[in-house]
Length: 213
Image (cartoon, rainbow, N blue to C red; front, top):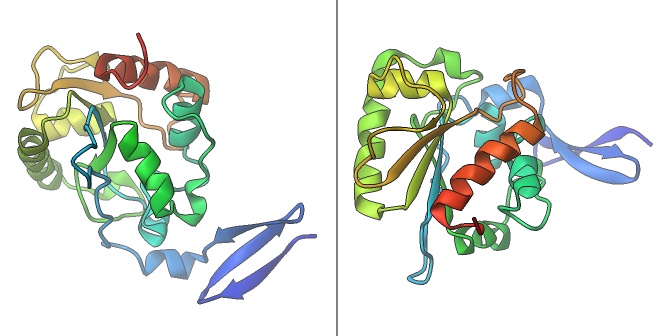
């Protein structure tokens, strides 16, 4: 059975007996410029080993308050395939607190270069990305993760003025942290697959000590 059931202005889509949240275009547009809180340590025992850095929240991410939440995003499937997480995550409905704590307990944090949500990263200006790079450096200096992984080479080049940067480990650290650039997991990035993303994310996870080398 396929249909939609309204709930608090949103919809749950029934597929094969299950339910999954979806949003109308108007609902998503209402989240433009919204901010999504960083996923960062909340307890003394949380050791931030690996900080993933997205470009900025998409509208679905803003609607669910969950990073990399669009159903077409390959972030969590790639983490699972790489062994960075051990249970499947479907972020489309939004992660709950226990799921967030699982990531924190693994030593994983998530932030963005730019905080405001847009439909596409191409809507961001150069000044926004440069300011975001400076804010990221300050955050890294304060939290001292072992490894920072920026997901998106074009955004990284703009934010840090590194026009010739390539994927992989960067020659200079960021505020004392080992700095990597990894592929963007967005479904719009047709150059990557879950398998290729898993390879890249597994590499930074091993560098950070999240998984065994």
